[in-house]
Length: 253
Ligand code: PGA
View 1: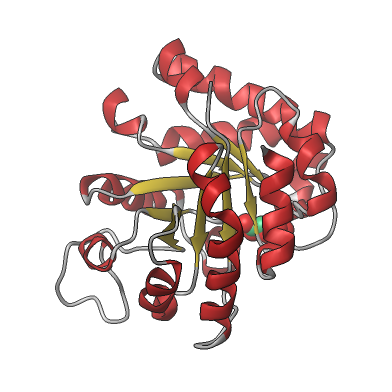
View 2 (view 1 turned 180 degrees about the horizontal axis):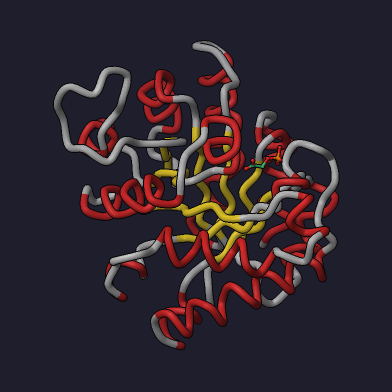
């Protein structure tokens, strides 16, 4: 059985006091749940990572970064390395979130380097994949997801790939209030799992967790999670309030 993995992607939100308040709210409600039934993580902005890690204290809520650079150190103004993230206590790192692909312009090749560096640096990557609305309408969803997965995981051995969580996030559902129907999401999750079985093995495909992301909320968490290949949720907007994030965790377990 795959343990549900619920994560909050705070994007470019919160400030120095609200990040602590949100962390404390999540920690107080999620501690027992988190340890027993689900993996819970939050992805705050870089500058608030230390405050969030401190505020989460001994709770079982893990922390990850929303992005990382693939070089270890050196003259890369503005960038953050995996060793820096590890040094302050991060566990996870998002790689290839759709906003980084489509707003910032990251390529599959760059994302692949970030995934590889994340694993090499001892962190666990969450590789995000998903199609644009125009790609779905042109029946290209499977092609897009195949390209993003094959290029994103290129060069990774089975052992390394087993450290990865996949997040399927249809771009048209992110921040729009339009959630993929559970069956629509399940269809792509099933496709992704079969693709992973072809790329690696049935064992890896069975073990790897595939999160759904895109307007996940308290009132749709349970129905999404009821699908056999949806193993968790990557939550944006609804993770910015402790109550709604905790309700989503409850719906997911
Ligand atoms: P959303 O964002 O829940 O606000 O749609 C999800 C994500 O981008 O990870």
